[in-house]
Length: 113
Image (tube, rainbow, N blue to C red; front, side, top):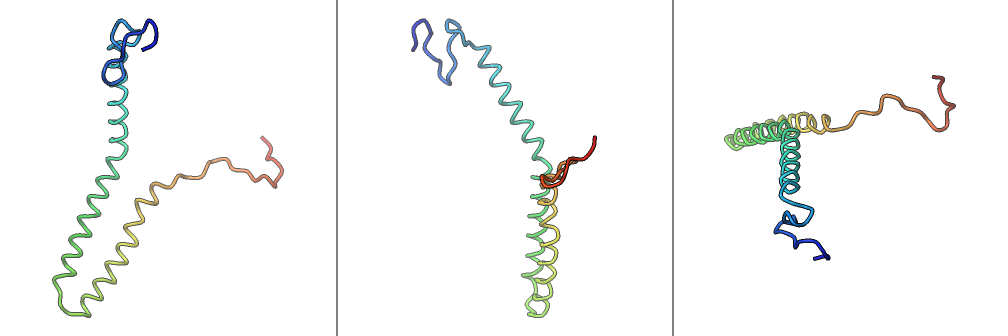
């Protein structure tokens, strides 16, 4: 340890004799738990959507496996592919950031205002 500082505690915090005490550790732990809650709240909708999507795909694949008729299986597979292409892109579209409201082109003169 540096001169005049107490040795670090396990986890990186010094005891109260060093300037970084348990209050700092508690504060840091609170910040980390708050961040993890905020991120879990932000992704909760996506996780629910993914779970629902996986459940639907699993049920549709069970329907596909129940039929032995090649024509029926081909028709079901075609409809499953169309559904997958349409529904699977919804979440990707939601995650794409919208363009900025104000845009400009370097080759054009600046707009008034």
